[in-house]
Length: 266
Image (cartoon, rainbow, N blue to C red; front, side):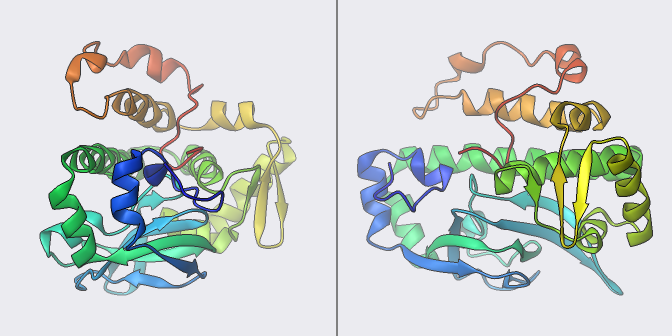
């Protein structure tokens, strides 16, 4: 339950009045700037960040390159929570790719609130499962799906993170996130634009035909969103009855019409 219209993080929105009150006294505003590193792989995680807008990318660096994106965190998510709780080093580089607003609190304060609120633990565990599912799906997607389908899927995911039809990323940044050459993204973006699916601008891409982009996306888009939809159906008290029905894999693969993307519409 949020205290003001500016606090739009979906994780915070889901909290009860008591849970949010316990966190609110520790929260401070944070401006997210493009290129800002919230932490590097192996860093101590001293803060937990709740984005209200913008896009944060978790990536695994390689010796001679920034590596590819492992997971995206938008306004539904939390940055650094598990590492802060465990007193563990950061598991990835975590870089801001789209500017925005956020709230932050110290790892120490977050641990104190966590210890006193069992239902908050369940909510964080549920979100952590969603983030794990995303990173696993991304690993599979990078390994087996053609680049055009992957680009379409990531445009849909980034769109959900940022809201609206405009994807405020350069083709070079998108190529880096996907672990492919910039020329490959440029070629495919041009083909999608020629078919009326997207419109390319300097520094951004606009989605023109949402349905066609979904059709051209790989099955990972629907599979992940289907799982997250089931996951979000788990009540705050943790009772499993709401997800007793198994995920219908066949119907998920056949359709990408889901309204609860991992990074979206909190």
